Image (cartoon, rainbow, N blue to C red; front, top):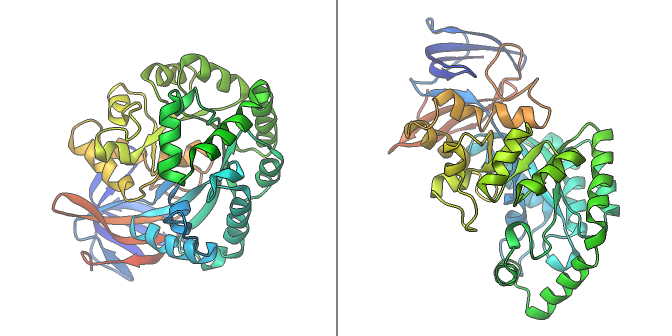
Length: 379
């Protein structure tokens, strides 16, 4: 298969009129365009870019439980989410699976175990590639987390602490409002969670060290989460975290950069122009040169659009903006050798993108050299 007549976005620039040759699922050549030959996809002057790599997506939780009292089968949710992600250009997905307290209803250990088991069982049915990002709530029992990390599907472990009084919940009132709105909990249920979490306060650092030790032994990337101060960043870095996920303040992001950490922020924040939680704006952090990669968080369709917004506003070159959703996240979780950029020898996970009313839309999604999604716009 060959892709011709496209604006090919490489890690370092754009080939305005190029061709990509693919053989046996691998990119074998990238060059200036030539006449049509063999089995081709004509990009029709659209953009050709690597498949998007999303290392933190919460949309599976919503697919399983779109409302507090509705819970759909995990296999049903995964199969249909796989198709939706393909249509949005996400070819490699790390589902952010929460190993939280059972009181958080849809986010509980039982569901988390079922998700990983179902992902393994359905691997041959998927159009795209699925992995797990284990969100480890350290203010709880870690036995199930240790078991989960052993799965070969796990590519990332994040250290999370949602105890009220720090992180994104420095204000106890915000903590209550959030858990009432998102999980439908009442005050008595929230009080019980707070008491339980507070009981682990003296053990948190040791718990983080235990998780990090096991993750390191498996060769997994480790992320911190909701870093709210330079001191918090220094602590998690000393434990082994090399990714800072969603730093809450500019000072925390700056300290992460000084320590050489990879800074991950939310793509929806770029599209909206603000944080829905009132925390650090992704655009502000990017303007300060403090963001390395974007992830979908709760809205996968924002990934592609956010890169084009950053490019069209003149904040980043097109290549650098695309790297934020492709090469950089792939490298952050140790997958950069095979995916994340258009380079000879890498797997042919590719997108053909056109624009509708100034908004980028996927017209072809190619995984391993095979077209898995097609819509109008190219021949």
